[in-house]
Length: 125
Image (cartoon, rainbow, N blue to C red; front, side, top):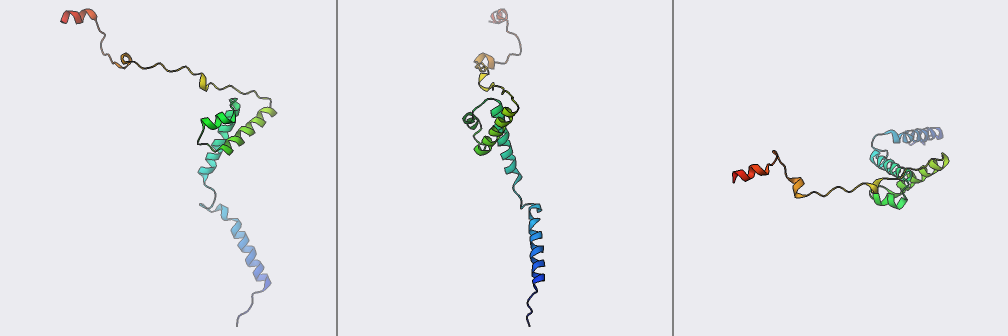
């Protein structure tokens, strides 16, 4: 003969299964990937740095094409609110103001181990 479980037993079973399932986020491998969270935080930091450097969002997106645009925007917006709230002035970027490197010439590529004396080379010939 089959006996139907009591309502108390069913309630205890439901309660214990709920308690077990609430702890699932503590099991390794079932939570979010930490690399994804790290990339998002880095993108937010990039956005905040762009705002502090007085860069527009479009420039920030162009300079950081691999960063998630939504996270960059969130970081830019958070930094904007923080700077306005604390009356902080931004620091202009010096990215485009660097002097160009001098072009390498053939003479710069030559390696000399001794100094050349023009008089010595004429006497040998």
